[in-house]
Image 1: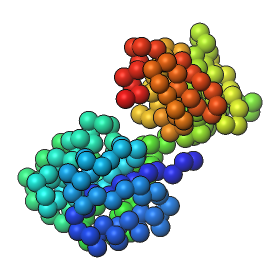
Image 2 (image 1 turned 90 degrees about the horizontal axis):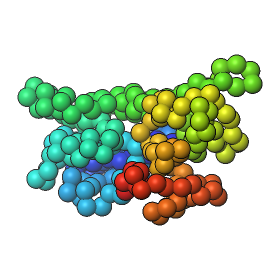
Image 3 (image 1 turned 45 degrees about the vertical axis):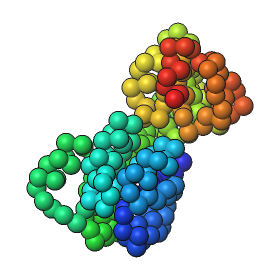
Image 4 (image 1 turned 60 degrees about the horizontal axis):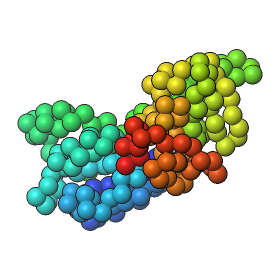
Length: 217
């Protein structure tokens, strides 16, 4: 399974450093640390799976403001806060964070919050294999090709055919799978290159149709 890629948005330097070390010790990738919401929006490439966000950042943009952008991008996030103000928590709840972590944070609380996100990111899907029903981790799936009422599910280990419509498997897969063509779903984590007509994955070039180009932006 590919590791969950986490960013931290925390204005207190020592808290951010401690949290980064803790998240890494839990076997997650920390792919960015930002000390303000403005810094995050200016520098991010959005290539992460989840964010840990302090609700009360010291600059003009609050953690709630940052969460609005994360929600628009369909990114999972956890709120970090030392304040239990009911009005703030009520506003935070409307943004639907995956979890809350109280400050000063404890390793078990951080681990539990990130596990919730990992479970959402990597739900197993069930396929019919040689020995009956088997589980497949979506993280191992490169792309899915439709062929009528059948689909080809391609992984680095090989390919399996299932009697299922593409729209059915699309509903089972996490958000990182995007439609690039009426016959193709691809895992964004494995895209090597793309342009307006093709996507490159594992040495293969898959067609992109005009109506789905926006999904690659």
